[in-house]
Image 1 (cartoon, rainbow, N blue to C red):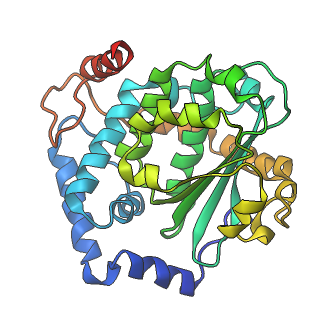
Image 2 (tube, rainbow, N blue to C red):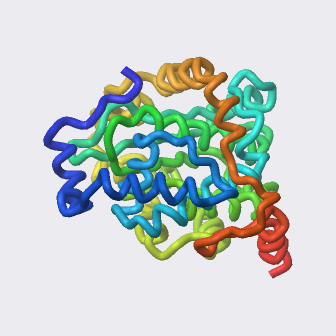
Length: 305
């Protein structure tokens, strides 16, 4: 199974953590549906399932959900390097897959956390196009909005068992800034932990560059591990892939399942690519980023600063 869904006990833990029972969920969904129809620059064709994910990811704050929804559709329009031409059969994605393995693990932790892992296939490789790597990650994120039947917390593991400095110096920080803006300001994810494993000393320099892009809440959940052993203090070993001492199977097999699923949804992604903000309409609300020029202007300022 691609994603094992939460048990009733895990669902109860999640609902209690968000105080879900104190909210009139259907009423809040209707508010979002009505609000989307009133926004001339935003699409209003999303189903209730996706809107519920935004409510849960925003801890049932309707106003925060509105802001994230608006940013989500605006970023889709302003960041084509992440959100257009999304097909895993494309040559640029295949180039990424030559050097990177990634997968969302099927099993949840006992307390209902979903684990995602990204790692290098080999130790020495040419630096890939980071924007294409991010595109692939957001493809999985978008598909999870469709496939996750109920809410879960997220844990991300990045394995740095490769010459990090060699590649980091080739990455435009502007691309990283855009990625973190998307994750924090547009996607309805509840990130409980981020684990950087097999981290070299150079990771400290990386964090000084990246931390200004992170919210205090996200910065607080980042854990740096120089080996795998300390990861087990947070995540049960048995649900991890074989490469990390677990029983979830090989990373290559887990990734292949996701790639097949992404390919099966190629026509869905093609339709989704067109569900985005209309940037010709200037009356954007809720403190969003505005049109493409305003957004890109903020990125250019980052590079100058």
